[in-house]
Amino acid sequence: MAKIELICIGSQKFKALKELEKDYEKKINYFSSFRSTIIKPFKAGDEKRSMKINGEKILELAKKNDLLISLDRRGTEFSSEQFAQFISDKLNYNSKNLLFVIGDAPGLSEDVIKKSDTIISFSKMTFAHDLFKIVFLEQLYRAFTIIKNTGYHRTN
Image 1 (cartoon, one colour):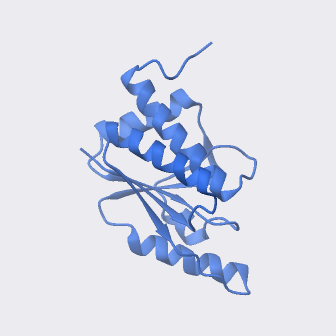
Image 2 (cartoon, rainbow, N blue to C red; image 1 turned 60 degrees about the horizontal axis):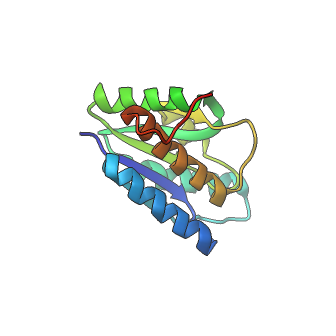
């Protein structure tokens, strides 16, 4: 079965969110092999240069057998059910590993966006980096509970 990886530029700064992150990662690993990789952000005086170098770091970690999925507000929005179907389809009908990427404050470089197989938006809004990682992990966990019909997700 394919593996799922999340690459983030920058790590959690808040202890409570780090604990929540670990909790969701443990829950996700119950359903699928999951790991999170943190890239130390490159900070230059020039934001575009920083984005380019951080993007290069992401692309260096992407393997030939990865389906590169950028999480960016320019992407396609899904409902939780549609995201679950997306995950299910990719895991069942695709031999590639799912590689999700989250940029830092300025976002993902154009190189990463162009090389992405899919771009997903969770909202047109901008989220704090630390909070968005938790939102993504919760939605990934929710997707698995929808796929397995555990009762965690309720529709009204």
